[in-house]
Image 1 (cartoon, protein in one colour):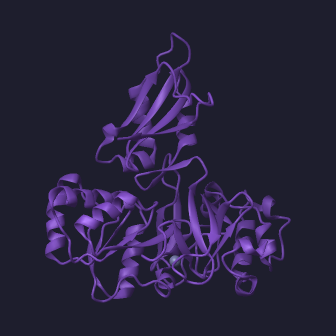
Image 2 (cartoon, rainbow, N blue to C red):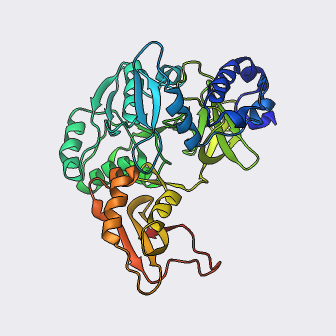
Image 3 (cartoon, rainbow, N blue to C red):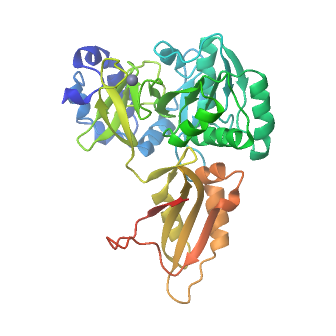
Amino acid sequence: MTASFSLPPEAAEPRLDVARRTLERLRGVPALAARYAAHVNVHTLERLAALPPLAKDDLNTALAHLEPAAEHSATWLFQSGGSTGAPKVGYAPTGFYMAGVHAHWQPLDRTDVFANAWGAGRMWGAHYLAAGLADLSGCRIIALGSVTREEYGDWLAFLADRGVTAIGGTPSVLRLWFAHARATGVRLPSLRKVLWLGEAWQPQLDEDLAVVAPQARRWGMFGSTETWVVGTNTPDCPADTFHPLPHQLVHVDADGLLDFTTLDPEMLNPVLRYHTGDAGELTACPCGRPGPAMRVLGRRDSVVQVRGLGLDVDELITRAEREPGVARAQVVLTEQRGRATGVDVLLLADGPGAAPDAERLRKALLAATFTLSTAFQHDPESFRVRPVDALVSNGRTGKTAALVVREES
Ligand SMILES: [Zn+2]
């Protein structure tokens, strides 16, 4: 049982007082109390593994009740899932737990000029946690945030001029930067470090970097707004493999799903066997660093990544199928070399006379779905809703999946 944890019992069990305190907090949430009633005395990893896992909705329910507050700083509210309607929130103190990350992972140093290209504002966490890390490293910071397609050229010239040595962002956003630089002949010879977080690394980035910034190497973080940074890697590690931080207890269950338990007493979110929906395994990292590393094998739930944001396909379909005249709905995600170029909701009419109002539904979905309105902020026309005569089905199995992913050449 214990071999499925990132820490051995002798390292983890003396620190399970944090997990027990989290359990008490969850037990105090009326909607969750019953499921934890039988679980007491969590002093061993075996007992911890027997706790019911926590899903995103459970965590949001708990946070709505607990409304945690930081003891020594301000309490920041960030987007935490909730792909429809208003954003659900996760909490963090100023500093965003990055001191614990910086103690084990220092991609930046005082000599770096770091362009922080994660989007700022909109209750997104990544820009601020990267700023926290850069602050601890004492480097020079350019708070770039998100820019529009028309602005890439001017900003790239500025970054080249400033001798930027490091940049950080979501891989799909970094791809836009480097694809633009490559296409327009911009070179960033001083760039040595690319920090990333928020979705899987994209191999196309390696190709673009080889041309635009041949000295650049990738430095990855894995985490979520609920768990904050769970693990990190270096250029010597495979892109899908991360070394868990000692205050993050990673567990792989019998189904191959990862769950996370915080051992950090400062953590505001009650993270106790929390499922991000990612499958994974614990493995030895080829970089040679001892101890189990976490290999992330991708999502297993109904949430897909669309431009770095989680889109809950089942939620979207439920909403579309509530529309008058709609019998069934299907989501088609179109990607070009790993990046989402469009999302289509296909509507199968409820009988010959039915005519669902696709444009009205499109506007309603866009307005109510945070992931869609944010991901397609600059090209809302790439989100479409259209009636069809037949949904897309798999000719081999005859099945009609809720989600179809299409690769554009
Ligand atoms: Zn490694």
